[in-house]
Image 1 (tube, rainbow, N blue to C red):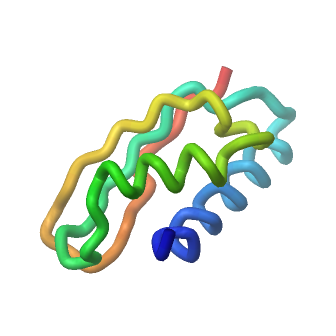
Image 2 (cartoon, helix red, strand yellow):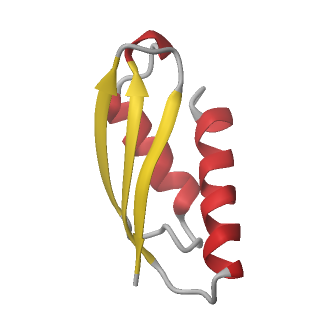
Image 3 (cartoon, rainbow, N blue to C red):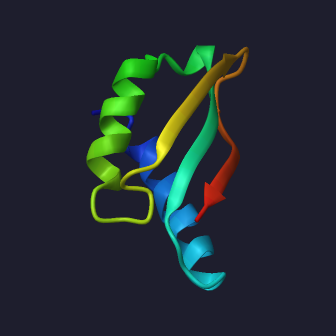
Length: 80
């Protein structure tokens, strides 16, 4: 799970933001994964699901798109 160091800050940042704004659960997370990161979407999804357990993102639907870059970008997330 070499994606952990890339995914954990996303989970932490979104969790902190949601808590600051009054709570809720994230129902959908949209991310763009750079094709030069070497990360496969399935591997990203599996690692995300493991790391999100017990957080506000635990049951979030993950929407992923790729783009020509060497980074991951959070596009948006929905909170209910």
